Length: 224
Image 1 (cartoon, rainbow, N blue to C red):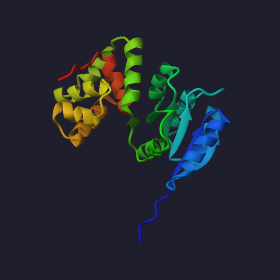
Image 2 (tube, helix red, strand yellow):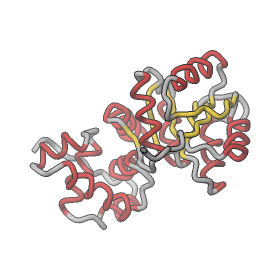
Image 3 (cartoon, one colour):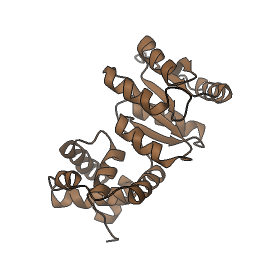
Image 4 (spheres, rainbow, N blue to C red):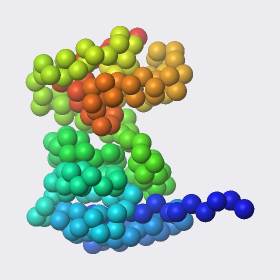
C-alpha cells in the first residue's frame, strides 16, 4: 500500500471574490491541493496564514488596506514555513521588485494555465523557488530601467567563480536552466548546482533576487 501524502494546504489572497472563487474551483480539481482559507486583503491574508499555517499562500499584490507586498513582508518576518506565490498581471512592474525584496518565493502570471498553476504551487511547497523565464525577462527589464549600478551588488557578484558568473549572467538574460545548459554545453543538473551555489554566496532567496543583484552589478552576457 502506498503511503498517504497530506495535501498541500493553500490560502488564496485576492480582493476580488470572483477571482478567489475561480481559483478555488480550479485548485479543487487537484486531489493533492487543499484550499483551507480565502483572504480579501493583506491583513486577512496574514491572519489566515498565522491561523491555518498553510504550505502556500497565493498572493495578489494590489489589495486595499494592507497590500500583498506588506503582507508578504509580515509573513516572512513571522518565521512561519508558509511560502508566498505571487499572482501578478505586471500592470505595475515595480511591485514585482518590491515583492522579491519582501520575500516571495514564486511569481506567476494570472493568465497561467490551471495545471501550470497547480505545478507552481507544488514547486513552491516543496521549498523550491519558481520564476519562469517570461517573468524573469519582465523583472530584468524593470531593473534595467529603474536601477543604477550598485557597489554592494558588484561586491557580491565578485564572490562568484568565473563559471558561476557566466551562468548567472545567462539567467539574468531570462534563460532557463535548459537554455543555459545548451549554451554552455553543461548538464541541466550542473547548471542548477551552479545557480544554487551562486544564490548561497550572494544571499539571494530565489532566482528572481539573483537576477536583480546581477543587473544591479552590471552583469550581462551576450550570446556565446
